[in-house]
Image 1 (cartoon, protein in one colour):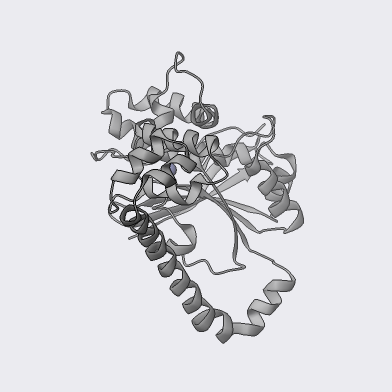
Image 2: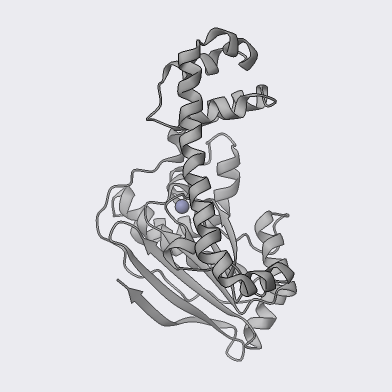
Length: 302
Ligand SMILES: [Zn+2]
């Protein structure tokens, strides 16, 4: 059994955390509404996440079935809805066509080879947070990285039940044979804040059921950083949970074997989008010395 000897580096500088998954009661309401009227609601209700749009149709969408809402709103309001949606997708359309012109068609042979097969060097596990886009911040191009994004970039241990993250691990390691796994944590992570906020009496939710995967990081953070402010504890836990995920990777027998054989490297990363810096480190599992785990090649990019 791998012995965890790693600790998060010091993260004790003050910063306020503005992300709180518990604050998204509006979103929950939206999703419930979408479920109720799933056949027609999506384009209309997407407006609820767009603060620049007229708010009048939002209330009607919450209160009334979509079919009734359609009859209630006048032409002006509906054109506002359509205009917002049109603007969003016009932007995406232009970006896609620019990608096709500037990248795809200029590297046609490369993309046609990619169409036949992929052979990524990396499996990247990062948070679903919209501010943490690994392809964007690390310049990963199509074909370079198999990417899994989940709340708080967590890796469950091997013995837990099924999850999409485990399926991605199995496929990328055993079939695609990636050479590197990189788990990226980040600043002001709402998932980690939810993990640090939960208590035993908290009602069950999908978020709680997921972030509890990182409970060991929460426990160790509380043990060493309980004298710090809650924001600082969260910041500590953001790195601690990355190390927890790296340790959990070693509970997968086929990952541990490849690491010990030198076929696979496991790395941690931490992206701070407040000062735009990136920290990277590599896990070393010494199978000849009682599975002692250490960190090497720590780098700080700023
Ligand atoms: Zn996050």
